[in-house]
Each structure stands twice: as C-alpha cells, then as structure tokens.
Image 1 (cartoon, rainbow, N blue to C red):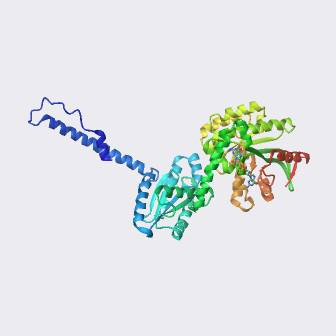
Image 2: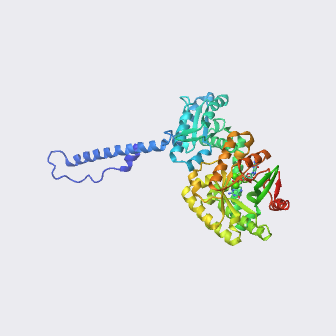
Length: 507
Ligand code: C2E
Ligand code: CA
Ligand code: CA
C-alpha cells in the first residue's frame, strides 16, 4: 500500500527554483531537493498513517471491534490453503450466526445504544466459547461468522449445545430486557465446497434455511440449495404476476378471503349475542403451477421487491369496491378491515391512494378499517403520526395488528388517532395453560379500556379461550372457533345466518 501512495505522489517538479541568497558552498539545488524530500517523507508518513487507519476501519466493526468480512475473505483463503497442505486430517467448519428477527424490531423501535449493546454482547458471548485456533468475524450488522478448525459432527454439536442457549438469553440493558435469539447454519470444508465462495454460499443457504424453518441450527445439505433456488423462482414469478399484468389483471391470480370479526355484547352459555359482524380481508395467490399460496410465502417477497405497492393498491381497491357492493345489497352494516404492510403505509402516497380509492368507489370510509402492525407503526414515529392523522381525517378506522409483539411506547399510542387493538394470537393460543399470557392479555385489555379503544383477540381456537377472554373484558373475537377465512359468498352466508338467528352465534 505504501508503495502505491509513493507512486501517486510522484516526484517533486517545482524544485528547479534557484535560491539567490545561498552562499554556503552547498549547491542550492541539492539543498532544495533535500528539503523537498524531507517534506515529502513527512507527507508520506502522514498518508501511511491515514491508510493504516482506513484499513483498520474497514477491517474492524466499530460496534464489536471484531474483524469484518474483508478480513474474513483474506483469512478464509489462508485457512483453505493451510488446510489443503495439512492433507485429509484437518478440514474446518464455517458457522454463521444470524440474530433473530427480534433484533430488527429492537433496532427499529429502540434507541441505537440498545442494538449496539446487543451486538457487542453477542460478540462477547460467542468469544467465550472459542478456542485459540478459532476465528470470529462480525460480517454484517446482524451476522457473525466463526471458523472452527477440526470441529465437525459430534464436536460441532457439543459446541452448539453450549453456544445456542447462551445466545438465547435475554440482554439486559438499563431497563430493557430483550431476547433476540439466533439462527445458525454451517458448511464443512472441503465436503460442502472447496472454494471460498462456494463454501460461504452453502453456509449462507444453511443459515437461511434455519431462519426460515425457525430451527436453531442447520447443516448444509444439497436439498437446501434446491429449495433456495425454488424460492428465487417464486420471487421471479411474483414479479411476473404483478409487474407484467396491468392492475386490472392482478385479479386473475390474486384473490381475497374474508375472516369474520365478531363484536359481542353478551355471552350466554356458549352463545354470543352479537353487536356487529365485521370481516378482515386476507390475500391468497392462485399460483399458475403451485396452486393456492398463503401470504406467508409471498407477502414478504412482495415487500422485499416493492411489488407490495401495486398489489396493495389493488387490494385496497377490491376492499372498497366490496364494501360499496355490500351496501347496495342491503348489507351496509358490515365493516371491512384491510392489512397494510409497513412499506405501503410508509410510502409517500399512502394517504392519497386511500383517498382516491374511497372517492372512486364511493365506499363509506367509516366502514373501512386499516390494520397496521405495531412494528410498522413504530418504525418512524414522526411520519407515522402524520400519515395516521391523514387517514383519520378521511374517516377510516385504524387498528393496531399483532399488538403485544413489538415494543410500542405507550406515550405514542396515546398520541396516535387509533380505534382498535388486536391482541396477537401468540398470547391467545395457549391462554388457558399459560399464566404469563393471561397476565399480558389482562394488561392489554386494561390499555385498550384506558385509551378508549376497541379490542379484538385474534386466533381464538378453543371455547375455553373465548370464555377466559370474555371474563377478562375482551368483546371482539376472531379465529378458527368462529370461522376460518372464507370465500366472499361463504362469508356473506355466515353473516346472513347470524342476522337470521337474531344476532346470535353459538360456538
Ligand atoms: P394477520 O393480519 O395477523 O392475519 C391473521 C392470520 O391468522 C391469517 O393468516 C389467518 O388465516 C390466521 N388465523 C386466523 N384465525 C386463526 C386461528 O384461529 N388460528 C390460527 N392458527 N391462525 C388463524 P393468513 O391469511 O395466512 O395471513 C397471514 C398474514 O399475512 C396476516 O397476518 C397479514 O400480516 C398478512 N396478510 C394477509 N393478507 C394481507 C394483505 O392483504 N395485505 C398485507 N399487506 N398483508 C396481508
Ligand atoms: Ca391483520
Ligand atoms: Ca394479526
């Protein structure tokens, strides 16, 4: 590097000047050259120090002080070379540690010092299990890579057995107590790839599969590669399905189901006396080759690619049209909820789109509820407040989805113009068996009451859960116990039956 700098500076051109005062018998040219050389040497030293500083900066992560992916590339080549010379005896493992998605939530919702602390702590925790010959790198914000010479099979399993529980422990930081967890994936040298890029790619595939399957660890296997390729193909086909078709043709592949949301005023035995029947629109994709796909397989892809924006506009338009049509058929009491993804909500024209759709379809705004996840709301509290105000001024209702899973600040909740809170089904699933979940639900009920918001429990599957929720003060219910997501005509039949039964629903 030093040589490079020297070459770039070049040789001093302006030194031919003759100094008239020179009378010391030294050739003035020689003195000037010496001075200039001295100056250049100083400059060179300074540059050398800057280069070293820059090198240090790009090769060490500031949050953890660990070597970065630049260093990993260099050292991995060395590892491969040494292992090749060592013959068959050696070999090593590349283990990737990726922090759980909770880390992303923390980063978006809490102050930077908390996520930095988590990264630092994770580095320290991993380091605590390493031997002298192991190497740890901090390669991407939420990713660490470990090179483990000779650690495969049983030995690797033993290592993970100690490491994983440690990574799952909560991080405690001035009043915050957050568990982020981690997913890990590994590939062996040379079995899973002799070249650096192949080996890293396969370790990447393994950790991706571990995150997707919500498994703590995955070792690379060729079928994982096939699955990753299939995912890319799906991504390409969603791009084709949405981008290639005009907006009015999206409906050839995508359609909506409606899941009832019931609001009750009394519970008599196993019969709810119903105040209102509402619905939540849930998207489905009729894939030309794969059949009907659930949103978990393609909504994240649509978010990543930005295609959620045209798709979301289409959805909103479908929902508003449906509302207007229900009104015309004498069912003007059904309210409809639509899910807005974070990207859609934070897009510049979110409120304009909503206003245009309402104006175009003539749907009554008070019958449309927009569901936003707690995480989407708190991503950027400043712009959130502004967009929510504009939504509210259009007359639509606003619901906080998956409530209790993010890190909302109650002071913000209070400032936003909200109408409804939905308790995440995570807390409802196991309500009868889990005291902690009951405590959480009780406090969510109190928050909703205190803020004057309507409250809905998602994922109500068992009669006991509904009864418990009722006793705690919850009056809105959604879940398989009431009905699964239904095709539009089945939803209408479901609602008409409740009306015919005198606004009663027995479970
Ligand atoms: P979500 O908004 O929390 O929707 C509720 C999900 O829970 C739905 O899954 C629903 O089928 C499922 N569910 C309802 N009741 C029960 C129950 O009793 N037990 C269990 N185990 N599950 C129940 P679905 O339709 O697969 O949707 C998953 C997620 O995809 C939704 O979660 C939402 O975040 C997203 N999504 C769905 N439709 C749309 C959409 O139109 N736009 C956007 N942006 N996201 C959507
Ligand atoms: Ca929802
Ligand atoms: Ca939800």
